[in-house]
Length: 283
Ligand code: AMP
Ligand code: ZN
Ligand code: FE
Ligand code: FE
Image (cartoon, rainbow, N blue to C red):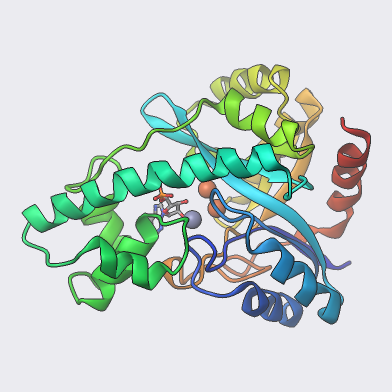
């Protein structure tokens, strides 16, 4: 059976490849359907749909919205949303504006630490409105301050690191509501990032389900088999849809490949139908 990949980033946010390039890689690894899930932006979707039509790959419109969860973040994926919805556009524009508030503060901290870079340099490299820390990481790599994006995050950009600056983020329930308002299905991304025990995650998902959560990203590049089965049973217990994807970014996560993650990811094609059905019926 063929594979799908429902979590991919492009140059429209912090991925390093164009939608068409991502689709080209997807075709090589036998991906039959995929979702473009850029952070806070849906502008890459039309290009992806067009290329998908040429290559015979189904393209599901998607987005990824970061939300605040205590001291950490909780990422919400949205699938099959009406990406032309005006209200969604204005919400996403606000989220991108909060990035433009935060990023110069990060640059300032880096400058104070003696690193020579400007926000204009980051903007030029990014070439998009949805500018994130991975873009700053790439400028630091190009200037030779770090050898890898991982090093940039560990030393400077990650929470608790020397140049970390928090960003104004919505509540998880708000992110869910925004996706629902655009007739999309909200799905909790990479649940291992949520700093909770198994029972804590269950309670959280139960609460989020009342707020409109539709699914959970069970299959993910870095999940160990035991985690995958743990999240699968969580999804069953709460009657949540099961999704999966690589979270491909290109250069900033060089160990992750489209469709296969670190080599052992296989998101079954059969997961698409229930997701599609839920979106059509507004479940
Ligand atoms: P931002 O959107 O600016 O808050 O940046 C967060 C993004 O940075 C995440 O969605 C990941 O794509 C990426 N990221 C977070 N931690 C790391 C890391 N250690 N190495 C590479 N990329 C990371
Ligand atoms: Zn990202
Ligand atoms: Fe994420
Ligand atoms: Fe992502």
